[in-house]
Image (cartoon, rainbow, N blue to C red):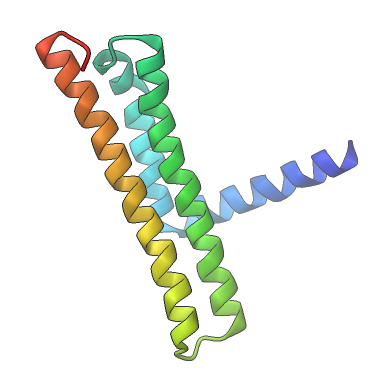
Length: 119
């Protein structure tokens, strides 16, 4: 049980640090805050709402992992290194792919709402 408590404390510490200092994380938290009510009105079903919010949460998860990769790389060396650059670029690509997923899921939901049918 203590391990779970310690993991929770570590997670809260990371959340606070990211929320205070990472602009992308702050923007994605704002996106989540806007998505929670907007998704309710846009979705045509409970599972549709879950997909909408899940897509945003996926983006946040990938952003957290990307930030962790960047922090680990910076802790190792701040000098230019082609392997570190690749690691950071891959993390950035993962965030971009997540953004495309969010845009696609929300786009499909908006189309469903506008035409009144499921695709």
